Amino acid sequence: MQQVQKGDVVNVHYHGKLTDGTTFDSSEGREPLQFTAGSEQVIKGFDEAVMGMTAGDKKTVNIPVTEAYGPRNEDMIMEYPTTDFPADMKPEVGMELQMGDDSGNVFPVVIVEVNADTVMLDANHPLAGQDLIFDVELVSIG
Image (cartoon, rainbow, N blue to C red; front, side):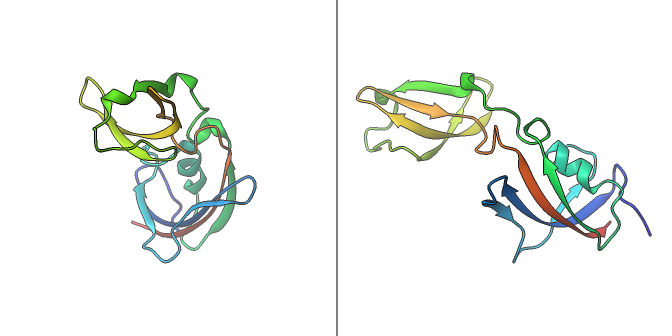
C-alpha cells in the first residue's frame, strides 16, 4: 500500500484535544481535512504525524508546544486606547477582532482586558502555549 510521502495530497479525519481532554476541533460531520504533506499547510507535528501512514491507518499523536502553535508570546499582547475603537462599539473581554499591520497583513486578536481608557488585545494564536493531542485517521492519499 502507498505510504504518505512529502508532496502527497492527503485527506484526514481528526479529533484535536488539549491535554485535559477538552476538544478544540474535530472534522466529525464534515469533509476530511485535505492538505499537501510536508508543505507547512498544517502545524509541524500534525504534518509529521501523517508521514508514512497508509489509507485507513489511525493513530493518536501527542504534539508538543514547539511543534504546534509555539509558546505564548507576551510581546503579542498590545494596549490600545479606547478612543481608537469605533464610537458605536463597546469593547468586551473575549470579543474577537481583526487588526491590520503597516504591511497590510490582517490577523485576529482577542480582547483580554478592558480598562477605563485602554483595551488589552492578545494576538497570540488561541492554542499557543498548549501541548495538543490528535486522533488521526488517514482517509486517502491523492
